Length: 348
Image (cartoon, rainbow, N blue to C red; front, side):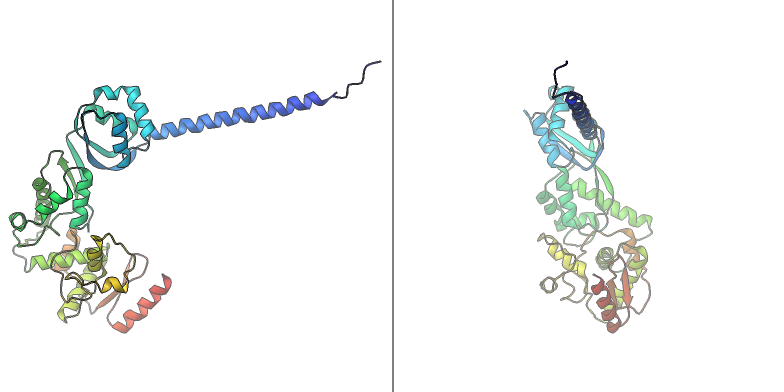
């Protein structure tokens, strides 16, 4: 007679459960490894778009110090991965003190290669349409080419401004043509600003616009800068230019929000909708309080905005309001303007 085994049949169940746990454990390990490999591949081989800048490598700087500078400026995704790859490639041993050009659209390997090759030729900077002098100079400073203070001193030197433009203006606001430029790493402040001003007059010449022969060209440029900020649509710009000219003919204030934004910009204030306190800000640039044009442009306008002022659309419009969808709605009477404004404000 066989002895009774109370555990009979339990071991197969335990073995089955153990095999399932082991299977899921192995699957989890494989997934973790796969995720790790994908993440490493993304960090190393996926290009990262960034603004180009000059990075100065000081004597004694190692991969860790450079990784921090690159990471802080949005040129690499991971400090640790940069340090690891640099060590594997022996980049530390190839470093030389100096100024290097970084940024653009590069993956981590390509960025490290730029450092190894001593990429010291030039950097590319794009200035979008409607960027103010303040933001333009800040963008150049961020590239590492020159400090904001040195740029501002030159851009507001009336003798330098007159020499470049031929106009007795207080600054280069409005004359720095929005475009993409390549600057040598050792470029002087004067050469950086001169390149943009030369492009401005070159583009006017190509468009058949002679600023010297154009009546009140500086006023045209000032109004164009406001039109630029009021709409990004060419078909609207000619209408908006006409609205402002209609207002000026009857001594009506322009009441343009971008002129108040211009005042607030240097204070670090950016609002989607201006407050009543903003509108009451005392300044010669505040067209809610002051009649006529501001004393100078409020940004560097596009060629299209300048054309719009020179050839505005003729209409009876005196008002326009944002429809909250990126376009403007125009009115001839104040009552019609208020009705539309109420409708769009309710949408907002």
